[in-house]
Length: 384
Ligand SMILES: NC(=O)c1ccc[n+]([C@@H]2O[C@H](COP(=O)([O-])OP(=O)(O)OC[C@H]3O[C@@H](n4cnc5c(N)ncnc54)[C@H](O)[C@@H]3O)[C@@H](O)[C@H]2O)c1
Image 1 (cartoon, rainbow, N blue to C red):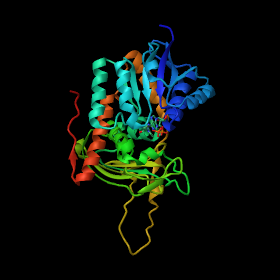
Image 2: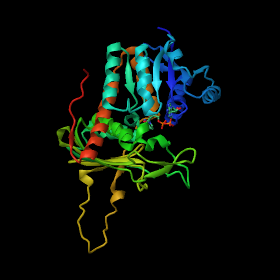
Image 3: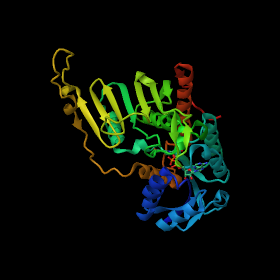
């Protein structure tokens, strides 16, 4: 079998994620490296076709990167048989309609998370993709980050003994936009445009918990809009209608308890913007995006509570760094390579639209818990 070019319609490439992570650091990087090698030794070489709303922005990107084709007409790429994959990194609210159209046109589907704005819509997309027999996937990039890959390695090695609990801390201060420009798009703070930290982050927490530790069985959450007014990209003041912080408590199969704080209204006193501490009977670990540190039971200091004396414990110095032991590529690129192999060879790809729908189930359950003050059990998500 010879090398073959795989046409990919990429929608949303003028955005933060679409441009930097998916277009330049993944698809173009893979193309420029000569493609992805398949088991039979042939290569699949991705060829992006840019899709978007602004002719001028698309033309600029295409010229900057030597990309031949771009269009503002989605239908024209969907009716083009040389394009086999539709990729979507638009704002969340715009995703569902475009993905529906792409499935109807018989394209394989790869999308940013969340796969849709509601669980119902996400399930519908997963069902349509299954019925149409198209390959499908959702970005679950955190699983491909060095810190979490090392954490996964620890779990697989049995390092923790019985895992007891997980504490996750995610967030940073997002400027309001008046005296310093905000570093996230303003739609993130408007629920009517698909914003909100629960919808943004709970899908991530779902696949991290599910893939590394086990299925999530229930959620209890409290949300807040700590910063009620912000200024948008044009300097206009607006009311923040979406949650900008979520304090979540998740129960996993096997009795593992996970607490994860997510906030765009917190100042960072951590080594990384996200960190998970995992405690087990035999050892503990703290993993971030890049690093992972451990403390085994055999070297655990005996901390003694004594408010009358200065504490001699230098606790943070008593952890050991987990070595890389391998080269870690960009996480988005690593997942793209798996998806491209999956499209061409049926190699397994567990990050499908149904998995994405489970992420939305957790987000919806989290919002419902916050509204009612109750714990919400998660029923198994099945396709009708
Ligand atoms: N995997 C991750 O870590 C990660 C991180 C951030 C965002 N995301 C997801 O990626 C998607 C894009 O997020 P982003 O931060 O890149 O957003 P962004 O605002 O930077 O980009 C949005 C893109 O959608 C397009 N778009 C289409 N219709 C639009 C409309 N009506 N209004 C505004 N833009 C419109 C824009 O032109 C642009 O290309 C979201 O679904 C988000 O949840 C994922």
